[in-house]
Image (cartoon, rainbow, N blue to C red; front, side, top):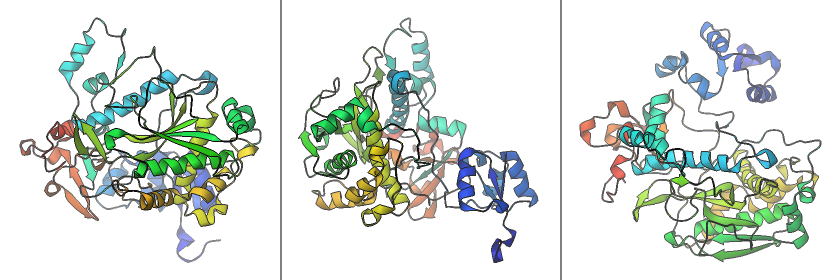
Length: 471
């Protein structure tokens, strides 16, 4: 039944499985019309519908783009759902871990190239194409940058020249998939079917190693190390039905990235890049695939290094890793769900004191049905994990980018690349202040002679100049 201001409400929604499931859970069917994007776009224009719901990617570049730009329509700052577009590879027996590693390295390389000022280089690309050894040696992650461009260049060519950033503050960067249905009728109990988890259960404890990176002078009281301890214990809590004592944590400062240490089930504190230690590795040898399985990122550093110089911008990600095993990835999937539980809890307003409101979880079998409740009852949501770790830390490292992306955020009528994440925002005077420290620039309107960033060379001024005022 319709009441008051909702009497004339008519919602046109893009007809996809995710949006249909979401909207029917929020509104009665009489309010909704589902169809292809051109149909609902026309319905909005002719007044048949007064609200349009769609993926942002559908709206950008459509005729609605101009209407958003001139103020005819307004895009809400409330996001019904956050589902980032990703590439997917096979796992398990049908999987190809080497191919998955190549894709991970490709994207990491393009983002890092944006930070350190590497970009499209036709001359270097042509040299690679003419190399008689091409196709027979290690895979280079520098070649895609030379031939296609860095992340910002690709973004600028494909979507928009707009740049968004918070030059004097950190943006939110912690993300996790949204949870859909967690029910399963025939999912096997991985605590029994997984050889890895069966061994951990029989042993009676989880062995977790925490690598303390000496490049950042990490100690046992450093914030990332304390966060790692919480997540290591939370994994044990999930496996052992709420028991935080079922974990043995070992701290160490030296690591051999060529092997996964047999002394541990899970290792925290390593970097998720192809090279787990030291500078970024721009090559990958398919004859020597990584023995590490990156389960999830739990912490992002707010500095990165180039030739020994420290710069602002997202640095190494700190991950929870397991041993790579095409036959059994159950432990990695469980570790990922532990992290997702803390992020999801924060997004839906659940903390340690209300952990009983977390849903049951059946995707890893009946033996882990209560794991989301157990994890949040112990660790709390992501913000609680960070806040409590920060309080106990030595204070040398701040929260930085480690804030959860929630459903409410600044929206705008055109896509924009975030320069805050690379630490290479243009000068404030060349942008528009949106308030709250947020600025937007248009690279096409920044004069080349200003010797500041243009999109074709995003981050280019970072090349070894530690005294640059914008770093």
